[in-house]
Length: 251
Ligand code: PEP
Image (cartoon, rainbow, N blue to C red; front, side, top):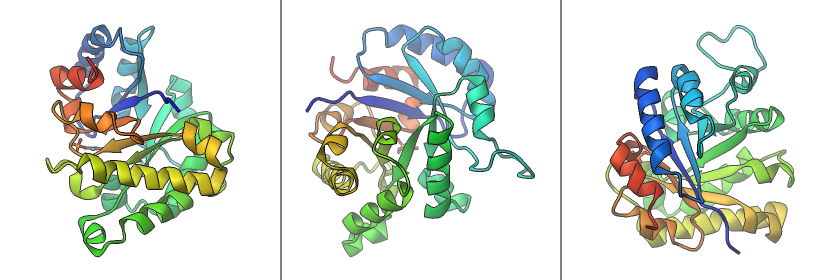
């Protein structure tokens, strides 16, 4: 079946609001022809500038995290109401950097996925194994577990609004990309997990990205693999010429 591609830039802790406006305005000119979904996940303080510049363009704006409670004594955190009030439509959940540095667990990832969906936000759920896990041969089991845990309680209907990003931790920001086959194999495993959970129809429609050192040179081949529906791009999404080429990978 033919699925849309979704290409998302994860800016992490980069760019100021002023830089955001310039970048999104420039990018909007360069993505006019694309039929794919283009997303920029910007820092919280850049959301307003990003949303303003992205208005009436092809670019969608994502937050990089959310809290699973409605409100309260959670200094430094941001709720779904705050995001939806701004007009945000997408949110990254469970990025490996949050799992590694901010005690994000499978349980909190699950709570955040449920919260995002309840609020009408489309989560980009990140999963992926460490180098140790790959070398031990447990990649497939581990990723299946992460997906099952994160989606616990998510209905078939809600799966229309979930994007999954397979991001091997050893490939993030390291310049080491998974081979096309390695990336596709795990994306296929994720799809098979969705078959077990939701049946073939939902699984075939699900959007599953690859992320981990995607760049101008490897985007085309990766995005043309059978089970890879685009990419979650870190470093290369910060450079306008590179992200332009990645988004327009099929030209
Ligand atoms: C990411 O941050 O999700 C990512 C994949 O980073 P990079 O493309 O820099 O490896």
